[in-house]
Amino acid sequence: MSTGLNFQLDNRLRLCADFVRDGAKLADIGTDHAYLPVWLCRIGKCPSAIAADINPKPLKMGMNTIIDADMSDRVQTRLSDGLKKIESDEADDIVIAGMGGELIANILEECDFAKNSSKHFILQPMTKSEFLIKWLCDNGYEIIKQDCCVAAKKCYTVLLVKYTGEITARDEIFYYLARLSPQNNETHHRFVKGHIERLIKQSNGDVHFSVLANRLKEIINDND
Ligand SMILES: C[S@@+](CC[C@H](N)C(=O)[O-])C[C@H]1O[C@@H](n2cnc3c(N)ncnc32)[C@H](O)[C@@H]1O
Image 1 (cartoon, rainbow, N blue to C red):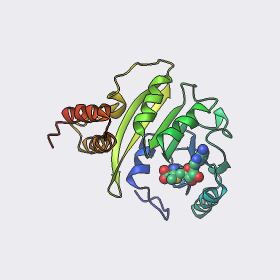
Image 2 (cartoon, rainbow, N blue to C red; image 1 turned 135 degrees about the vertical axis):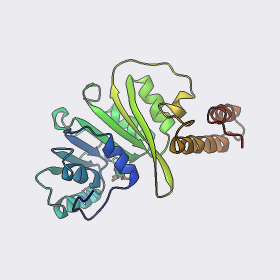
Image 3 (cartoon, protein in one colour; image 1 turned 45 degrees about the horizontal axis):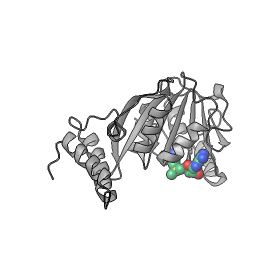
């Protein structure tokens, strides 16, 4: 697709973009270069977007992307810690990508309107996705969709979630698998293999982690 932009989204941001609803007002939290909001407004999927970041330096970069793309009428920048400076009626879909799972959970916890079930959150944890998924289950969020992709040879997962208020008790293994189908999907398989490798490293002296790793190996039919 030709967007006329001088950048392209990599597979990781592209997967986040795919999870955004057509016509949704967007907030991109931790936007850095603002590629995602500019791209989504340029292709016409979002009518408007807020590119938010806690640090002024990335926001300045984001501002340059917006100006270069001539999108100042559709995309605005906002200095904000998480969603603290975003009003509920300013965004339907909120992307929080490229941060650790714990920070993403913390941002949701501190957001006044996260429990509005009409809001969709698209979450892309760089680390500790299992922590984030447990937090979501314990705090009444439903995982609507989850997928994985490979970008620059690394495997990432993206979650689409919304608040329902239903708290679900889960077996611990769920936090490593959630909505993935590692038996049928090569990229999901690769992502779960990454969990197994980390669990094996962690298991040094702690049998709990090696039991989890072995359970995951059985699930993905990994005989190594
Ligand atoms: C690695 S970049 C990710 C950029 C982009 N979202 C992506 O996925 O490519 C992380 C960005 O999050 C910002 N950030 C970190 N903590 C934040 C917070 N509490 N609220 C908003 N932005 C934050 C950082 O300043 C940085 O620009």
